[in-house]
Structures are given as structure tokens and as C-alpha cells.
Image 1 (tube, rainbow, N blue to C red):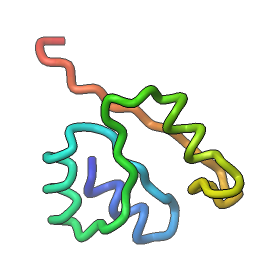
Image 2: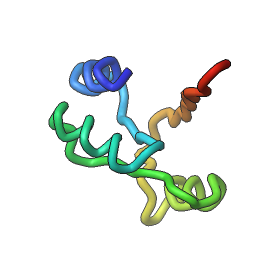
Image 3: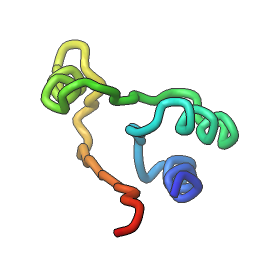
Length: 76
């Protein structure tokens, strides 16, 4: 999945925010040479989104913002 995300980012199609296991995500991101990312841990989604959407200091640049969740549920 991260390879597809990185390919889309390199093509200029997306700006990516990865959320998940911090160490695993960092290791994979480093191997793909991804430098900047926001990572969500034990923080309520509303708090993260409030910061991201803050017009004065947030990450939003007026483009479309999408949130994608991928769950890995063993034995499902």
C-alpha cells in the first residue's frame, strides 16, 4: 500500500498523511524516502483534524482533503 501512496505522491496526485503503528510506518517511510508526515497516535481524530484544518497554522492548502483508513484485522 505504501508503494502506491508514494507513487501517487511522486506523480503529484496526493499529499499523504499516514496513520498507524509509528515505528513500522517510520521504517517503511524511510525505505521509500518519505520525509514529512503527520502521524496519529492516541489522539482523538477531532483534535488532529482541528489542527490540520486550522486556516492560520494548519496543513490545509485549499485543495481537497481526503482521509483513508485501512484496517488489518486478523482472522476476519
